[in-house]
Amino acid sequence: MGASTAEDDRRRELPTEAALSEAGEIMIKDKDGKEIPLKSLYTGKPADERQLLIFIRHFFCGSCEQYIHALTQDLHPSVLSPAKINLTIIGDGEHILITDYAKRTSCPFEIYTDPSVQIYKTLGMISSLKPAPITPTYHQKTFLRNALDSTWTALTSGHPLSAGPSAQNGGEFLFQNGELKWCSRMRNTTDHTETAELKEILGLQA
Image 1: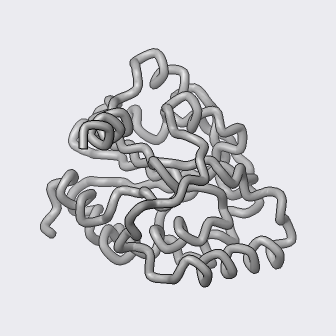
Image 2: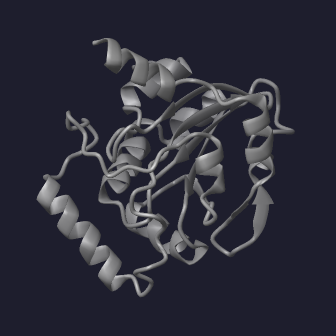
């Protein structure tokens, strides 16, 4: 119990101001390859607006695709917009995969990517292929089906080596008025924060 609690505390620990400042200057790319600094997603915004950044794993990760589906269902822009919340997806592969990823997942959110993976590392997101001890509710496929689908996507993409590091995990970071208010880093390959918990953190009706 103690070890688990310590691990949970570490994944929710806010990065240092120095780390946040460094990460904010790192450039990310949109689907066309246009670069902007990460901080432009959460600075210079209205004080009552919140920005939720979701860092996914590689662009062929079937588990993250299922998470996108869950976010779309439970935290659709039509739900977030009235609450002045903007959700952005950030990957770590090449930008040439963003358009297909958005189409494949029917993602209604803006998608950017950090192909350098430096934002992930600077903000303390870990690299690990450790499996989850408990299957998350957003995981609707069996492990085998998920693995087969991910492999097929990679093989038919035309860019099988451009999705990003297979072991790099992501996390969720919530900003308001330019300040990081909350974060959670994945401890394993299927450890995105459940949408029910995100709704609670955001103060949205369950």
